[in-house]
Length: 150
Image (cartoon, rainbow, N blue to C red; front, side, top):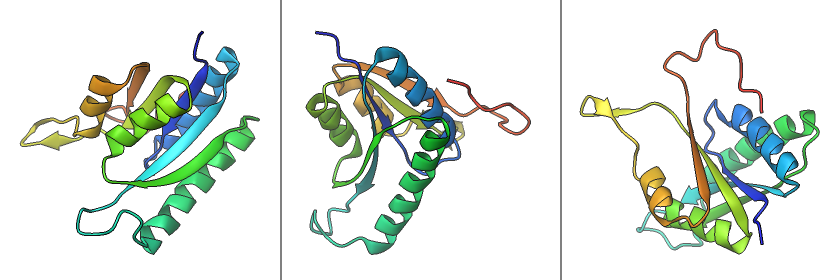
């Protein structure tokens, strides 16, 4: 059975609005549901269910922004904030639980020690996800470029 649902991870990046438009389009074409998650990474020094009020407020703002963009695109989605120790494993688990056929992740261009750096989440999702994974990296110079059209 084909998995038609799409999982989009958002982080508060300027790329999130473009990603939600793209994810809406893909979910619509697949006739599947769009799930949007923001994972709050809980430090090991705190209990997993610790109150992270400031981070939660920021996550609410991020999801509201994404939901507004989806509404403008006439797209419905389910959004959720999840507190977890490991962002990558949480995304992989969510994809399995929700019968997702595609995970979409955005990334900002970063360098570490003067070299391009993927971070830890993206390689871990790529290694563990059973479904397709799309990584969308922002351009080197996003100014002056039209937004992505899904």
